[in-house]
Amino acid sequence: MIAKINFADTDTIQKLFDLQKAAYQVEAELINFFDIPPLKESFQDFQQCGEEFFGYFIDNELAGAISYTVENGELTICRMVVDPNHFRKGIAQKLLSALELHNADCSSYKVATGRENTPAKNLYVKNHYKWTRDIEVAPNFYISFFEKEAKR
Image 1 (cartoon, rainbow, N blue to C red):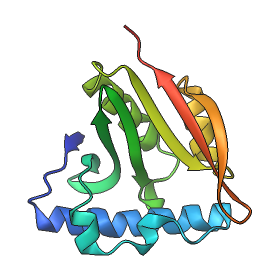
Image 2: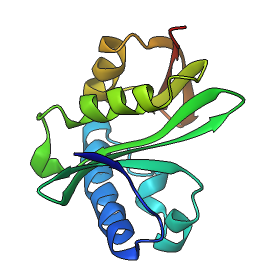
Image 3: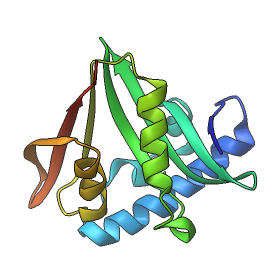
Image 4: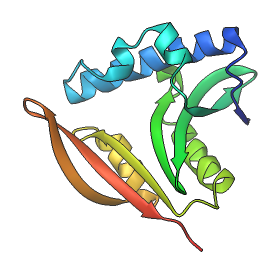
């Protein structure tokens, strides 16, 4: 089940924060870069991130989440996390599809991921996101940017 996460529910937010740490630790190892901002974020900073979240729940347990912001009709995906115990179950795909469906009035969708994060890049390309550029954000570490125009 996919549901909007209520940031007033501290218990769920703590679970989301812990899930995020576990998921981004796996990504850090995959891309060999350990300064991913969510890994360094405090719980208090996380609570004040200003992003909207959808969670993917299996038997009432949080198994994945996606967050985003919308500005001037452009949606930016900020975080996509899946519990490592639930990798390769299609959860990221389901979250991405639900996010786009829920925000069908947006003019475009944008996302960035580590250039070496092949699973994430493949997910976005499979969903018709177009690579726009790579930017070096730390010595020898690049972020790949993708964008998708909404169907109108």
